[in-house]
Amino acid sequence: MIDANQLKVIMPKCPIGICDALARKLPDFEVNTRQRIAAFISQVAHESNEYSILQENLFYHSADRLMQVWPRIFHSVDTAKPYTENPAGLANFVYANRNGNGNEASGDGWNYRGRFGIQRTGRNNYQRFMDATGINVIDHPELLLVPEYGVMSDLLFWKDNNLNNYADDVLAVSRGVNLGNPNSKAIPNGMSSREAYYHKTLAVLPT
Image 1 (tube, rainbow, N blue to C red):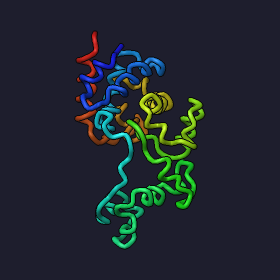
Image 2: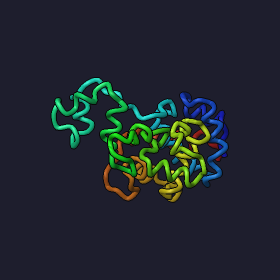
Image 3: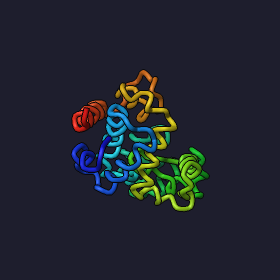
Image 4: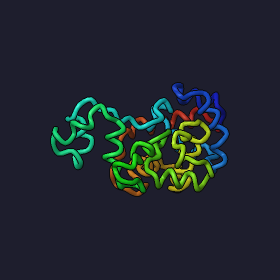
């Protein structure tokens, strides 16, 4: 349904290796119609800036910014300051005891930080990928940065959340990816970008 060259037209920033992996792997997860492909690409292109950002950025220069991003965790400059310009420490602190992660000292927050297009985050989610594929991302979480495996991770998220069922409704798909619930009433961020990629993909694909 789509090849690497077409994907490169839709996402000029996307490395060709990722375009190749997408073209090969989309059919394996039944992302195999114009609407399903457009729905999937609309989300990953927006979430990852066309696959140019493949890891969660946890480097913050200021305590004020940390307080804005995590207002429930950081209530003062003094509590936030130790985690400025300290991405590993920040990840281990804010993601401790969440999504299957151990405590702050375990290092799980940093090891299982968000990776690839739809950023897979947390030990439980890495374990889910390993269970489904046999690829040992628990001991080697960096494997999610390999294009083929990262694409599989994004597509597994898509499958696990039944997002093919919403492929003709870009708003519902966006809610599923950005808010975790296709039936939410909230408006996801970046809707104009997501919609633009959806229609751009449809325009590139043959009818």
